[in-house]
Amino acid sequence: MTFENIRTKTIRFALAMLFVGLAVGVYTRESFRPLEKILDPTTLELVRGRDFVTHGHAIVYGFALPLLLLGASALLKERFDGKAWQAVNKAFVLAAVGVVLTLALTLYKSSALVFALAANPAAPLPAIDASLFGGVRGLREALHTIAHALFGVGYVWWGAKLWKRA
Image 1 (cartoon, rainbow, N blue to C red):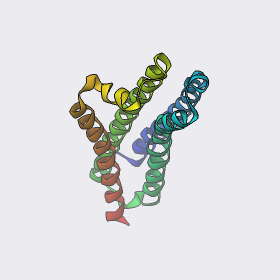
Image 2 (cartoon, helix red, strand yellow; image 1 turned 90 degrees about the vertical axis):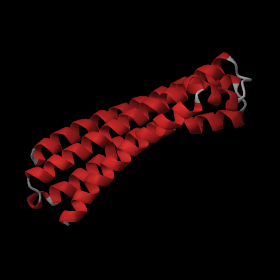
Image 3 (cartoon, rainbow, N blue to C red; image 1 turned 45 degrees about the vertical axis):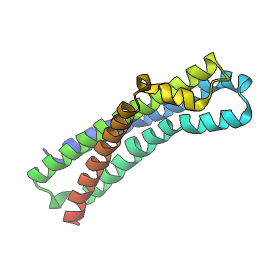
Image 4 (cartoon, rainbow, N blue to C red; image 1 turned 180 degrees about the vertical axis):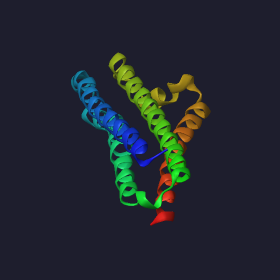
């Protein structure tokens, strides 16, 4: 494993996540257009705030943070050997899986919310929220915990490798 391998993987992933983030932003904006006509302004803003989380996760955790770590890695690449690059690769893969899983979970949650409100604008938000993941709260919490832990551990691991060589 070399810096060039890490660079190629990271840039491809970051560009894909930038595209996903922008696409999710458009999807979010367009999915809300029908709700603007049927929801009261307070509920609309509350739901919109929840829905835009996916867009932000894709841009920050899928695009900006990997490129920031890649830039720091480029500055310190002479201090890394093959074994260290293998560890960085494992950290990157761990983080990438966590980011993709997090995006999938938040997209599911926001889409379910939009579709439920489109079907019944009077539906209480807590009831919609409780019905996600088949109503199994433990499953929901476990999946979100695993997803966030994966990308958190991956990025911290990569950062620790950088810190050790700085």
